Image (cartoon, rainbow, N blue to C red; front, side, top):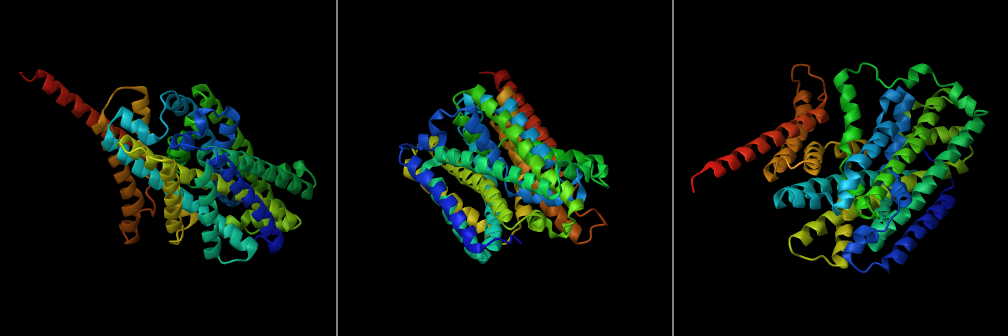
Amino acid sequence: MLPTMPLVTAGVIAIYVAVQIAIGVWIGARVKTASQYYTAGGRLGAVPIALSLFATWFGAESVLGSSAAIAEGGLGAARAEPFGYAICLFAMGYLVARPFRERGYATIAAFFKARFDRRSELAAAMITALVSIIWAAAQLLALSAILSEALHLPASVTLVATTVIVIAYASLGGLASDIAADVIQGSVLLIGLIALLIALSLALNDVGGILGVIEPDQLRLVAKGENWLDRLDSWAIPVLGSLVTQEAIARFSGARDGATAVRGCLGAAGLYLIAGMIPVLIALAGVHALAPDTALADRFLPHLIAQALPPVWSLVLIGALLAAILSTVDSNFLSVSALVTGVMARAGTAPSLWTARGATVLAGFAAFAIAANGSSVYELIAFTSILGQGGLLVAVLIGLYSQWGGASAALTAIFAGSACNVITYGLYPLLVAKGANGLPAQFTGGFLLSILVSLAAYGAAAAWEQLRLARRSAAPL
């Protein structure tokens, strides 16, 4: 539970939300074209890009999910937070940010259209939009659950309210208002987490009290009973699964130049590592010092705060979580909108500003429909990390740095990787549930397999393309 005073909490949340909407209204009045709506005029510096990337990546699962997993199983239970995603942002800066900004790709679909063809553009846009919508749905679920407990309202009511609020301010100002809000939300998140760490340190006498109770076995990055394939896959999902995403590409497109985009990514990686270590430290120490119930899962951290600190600190936690979630979900909505209108523009239909805003609203409704369907936050987040990402990753990295392979290679890689995901994460668990020879319930190394399958499919299709070209060249006129 989040035991705060509902009226006070409601008042603080109302003020915070009003500020976000005011930012959207103020910036939205200055946005005149769809291009400005998505690129913020191409004048962003490294600091706002870093804060925006950090705030977008650092969601509810980064605070609640990682602290609960680490309290129960040590660092080995949640390596993605913060290490995996910090490495991802670092690699993103060197591998993706500069070429995307310098070549003017505002969306991942734009890259596929320029480097490959229209078919691969549509396939990449559909997969990326679906991932963004599911990611947004997970954040809406988390936010509605937090507000439901804090305000003592039904979760169905808070889900509707949060969806309407985020759609309102995300649709008004576009990327510029999104990043302005992210700067505020990223700052609130950092301040809130640091304040919680200091307060908990004082409750345990000092920082040494926190560090002193951590046991060496908790610091192992290898989970118990884990084989080498599990280990590789658990690192590959956060590091490679989020390397090519529309939410990040949107921020590159708004940077002043390629070097600024790179610096923004590196800054975001540093911020993620610093902020992500705070719930890690709290969980590692709190499980010994105050002995909260680790069976509470995602409610572990709120329960720990309530047990160790005065009620007002639960409000600080709510503020930090609110900032983390809002900064992620509005970016998801805008990403879907950018993909939809970008595909329209390259098909010959010039999107208006109102079309861009309408697409953002529709993305919000789609995310709400998924969130209201009853899935868990964990299930949705896990799905976004693997769905189609292997094929997109292979095609983007090969396509950016070589001329090997054409449209057929890219399209084959995307479909092969997605099919592999469906088999390993969908069909395999269903077959095992029916008693298939005592096999493990989950397929081991499924994400790595999807990358290998995508790479093999890309290579085979590229070789076939070269063979066809050679035959045409050798054919008599």
